[in-house]
Amino acid sequence: MAGSIPHLSVEGWIKNSEQKLLKLFEYFLTSEYSQTNIYFGNIASLKYILQNATEVQEIKEDISKSLYNMYERYFTNVDITVDINENGNSVEYYVNIVVIDENDNTYRLDKSIMVTDNNIKNMDELMSGIRE
Image (cartoon, rainbow, N blue to C red; front, side, top):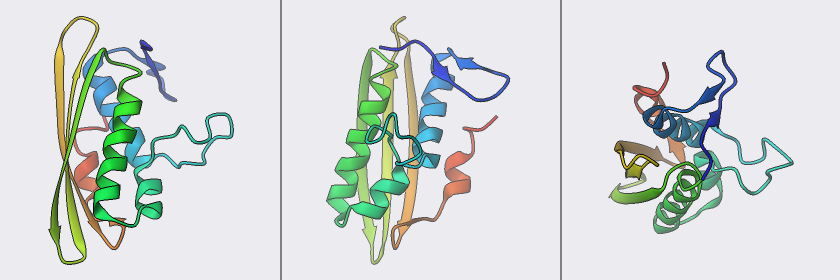
Protein backbone atom coordinates (compact mmCIF):
# COMPACT_ATOMS: atom_id res chain seq x y z
CA MET A 1 0.00 0.00 0.00
CA ALA A 2 1.45 3.35 -1.10
CA GLY A 3 1.20 6.31 1.22
CA SER A 4 0.88 9.40 -0.96
CA ILE A 5 -0.56 10.28 -4.34
CA PRO A 6 1.50 12.45 -6.69
CA HIS A 7 -0.18 15.66 -7.79
CA LEU A 8 1.15 18.12 -10.35
CA SER A 9 0.46 21.27 -8.39
CA VAL A 10 1.90 23.21 -5.50
CA GLU A 11 0.34 20.57 -3.23
CA GLY A 12 2.93 18.08 -4.42
CA TRP A 13 1.99 14.83 -2.70
CA ILE A 14 -1.49 14.16 -1.32
CA LYS A 15 -1.29 12.45 2.07
CA ASN A 16 -4.72 13.19 3.58
CA SER A 17 -6.99 10.12 3.20
CA GLU A 18 -10.13 12.07 2.32
CA GLN A 19 -8.27 14.04 -0.32
CA LYS A 20 -6.79 10.79 -1.69
CA LEU A 21 -10.28 9.31 -1.98
CA LEU A 22 -11.47 12.30 -4.00
CA LYS A 23 -8.33 12.73 -6.11
CA LEU A 24 -8.29 9.08 -7.18
CA PHE A 25 -11.89 9.36 -8.36
CA GLU A 26 -11.00 12.53 -10.28
CA TYR A 27 -8.12 10.68 -11.91
CA PHE A 28 -10.49 7.84 -12.85
CA LEU A 29 -12.84 10.31 -14.54
CA THR A 30 -10.20 12.29 -16.41
CA SER A 31 -7.36 9.88 -17.21
CA GLU A 32 -6.64 8.52 -20.65
CA TYR A 33 -5.84 4.80 -20.79
CA SER A 34 -2.86 5.38 -23.09
CA GLN A 35 -1.47 8.51 -21.42
CA THR A 36 1.75 6.72 -20.51
CA ASN A 37 3.92 4.01 -22.00
CA ILE A 38 5.51 3.06 -18.69
CA TYR A 39 2.19 2.13 -17.05
CA PHE A 40 0.35 1.15 -20.22
CA GLY A 41 -2.50 -1.18 -19.33
CA ASN A 42 -2.52 -0.06 -15.69
CA ILE A 43 -4.33 3.27 -16.00
CA ALA A 44 -7.87 3.27 -14.62
CA SER A 45 -9.96 5.27 -17.09
CA LEU A 46 -13.72 5.60 -17.25
CA LYS A 47 -13.42 6.97 -20.79
CA TYR A 48 -11.60 3.82 -21.89
CA ILE A 49 -14.16 1.55 -20.25
CA LEU A 50 -17.03 3.34 -22.01
CA GLN A 51 -15.24 3.21 -25.37
CA ASN A 52 -14.45 -0.50 -25.21
CA ALA A 53 -17.17 -2.29 -23.27
CA THR A 54 -20.32 -3.16 -25.16
CA GLU A 55 -22.72 -4.38 -22.49
CA VAL A 56 -24.04 -2.52 -19.45
CA GLN A 57 -23.09 -5.39 -17.12
CA GLU A 58 -19.56 -5.44 -18.56
CA ILE A 59 -19.21 -1.68 -17.94
CA LYS A 60 -20.43 -2.15 -14.38
CA GLU A 61 -17.89 -4.90 -13.72
CA ASP A 62 -15.05 -2.94 -15.37
CA ILE A 63 -15.81 0.18 -13.32
CA SER A 64 -15.83 -1.85 -10.11
CA LYS A 65 -12.63 -3.73 -10.95
CA SER A 66 -10.73 -0.62 -12.11
CA LEU A 67 -11.68 1.40 -9.05
CA TYR A 68 -10.84 -1.45 -6.70
CA ASN A 69 -7.42 -1.98 -8.28
CA MET A 70 -6.68 1.73 -8.05
CA TYR A 71 -7.86 2.28 -4.47
CA GLU A 72 -6.30 -0.86 -3.01
CA ARG A 73 -2.87 0.64 -3.64
CA TYR A 74 -3.59 3.47 -1.19
CA PHE A 75 -5.96 2.06 1.46
CA THR A 76 -5.93 -0.97 3.75
CA ASN A 77 -9.53 -1.94 3.01
CA VAL A 78 -11.64 -1.11 -0.06
CA ASP A 79 -15.27 -1.85 -0.87
CA ILE A 80 -16.66 -0.82 -4.27
CA THR A 81 -20.32 -1.19 -5.16
CA VAL A 82 -21.74 -0.28 -8.56
CA ASP A 83 -25.50 -0.38 -9.17
CA ILE A 84 -27.26 0.22 -12.48
CA ASN A 85 -30.43 2.00 -13.54
CA GLU A 86 -31.21 1.58 -17.25
CA ASN A 87 -33.61 3.91 -19.06
CA GLY A 88 -33.68 3.41 -22.83
CA ASN A 89 -30.29 4.35 -24.27
CA SER A 90 -29.26 5.99 -20.98
CA VAL A 91 -27.69 4.21 -18.04
CA GLU A 92 -26.96 5.56 -14.59
CA TYR A 93 -24.14 3.89 -12.67
CA TYR A 94 -24.35 4.45 -8.92
CA VAL A 95 -20.83 4.14 -7.55
CA ASN A 96 -20.25 3.70 -3.83
CA ILE A 97 -16.67 3.65 -2.57
CA VAL A 98 -15.83 2.89 1.05
CA VAL A 99 -12.20 2.87 2.13
CA ILE A 100 -10.36 2.38 5.40
CA ASP A 101 -6.95 3.94 5.86
CA GLU A 102 -3.95 2.79 7.90
CA ASN A 103 -5.39 4.54 11.00
CA ASP A 104 -8.70 2.62 10.72
CA ASN A 105 -10.57 5.75 9.62
CA THR A 106 -13.43 5.11 7.19
CA TYR A 107 -14.20 7.38 4.23
CA ARG A 108 -17.06 7.13 1.76
CA LEU A 109 -17.76 8.56 -1.68
CA ASP A 110 -21.07 8.19 -3.53
CA LYS A 111 -21.35 9.31 -7.14
CA SER A 112 -23.86 8.77 -9.92
CA ILE A 113 -22.43 8.53 -13.44
CA MET A 114 -25.02 9.24 -16.13
CA VAL A 115 -24.13 7.76 -19.53
CA THR A 116 -25.98 8.15 -22.82
CA ASP A 117 -24.59 6.56 -25.97
CA ASN A 118 -21.30 5.90 -24.13
CA ASN A 119 -20.87 9.59 -23.26
CA ILE A 120 -20.76 10.92 -19.71
CA LYS A 121 -23.60 13.40 -19.35
CA ASN A 122 -22.96 14.78 -15.85
CA MET A 123 -19.20 15.43 -15.72
CA ASP A 124 -19.61 18.85 -14.05
CA GLU A 125 -21.76 17.31 -11.32
CA LEU A 126 -19.31 14.44 -10.85
CA MET A 127 -16.42 16.86 -10.43
CA SER A 128 -18.25 19.04 -7.87
CA GLY A 129 -16.84 18.45 -4.46
CA ILE A 130 -13.68 16.94 -5.93
CA ARG A 131 -11.68 19.86 -7.32
CA GLU A 132 -10.47 22.46 -4.91
